[in-house]
Length: 101
Figure 1 (cartoon, one colour):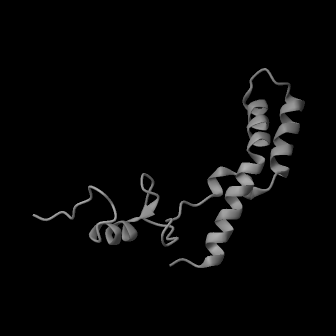
Figure 2 (figure 1 turned 90 degrees about the vertical axis):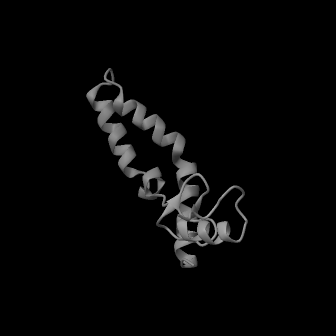
């Protein structure tokens, strides 16, 4: 089980991403538009730099919903490989079989 503080920190990051998503997309559109004057583009870059770092989507870490484990994460199920193995062996995940050959 992951530390509770790390899980909470990641949840705060997710909420901050949602809060600043509109502002970030508008500023990025201004920056990437080739018809934007240089001064306006520079101001948009500065405004983007003033936003909190944790408002960026890339700062959010995918974590297992069951254990909070940050690595070996399956996006389709939103759980880690360890949790998937435990749930699969106990019959909690429909259609999952343990391979044997």
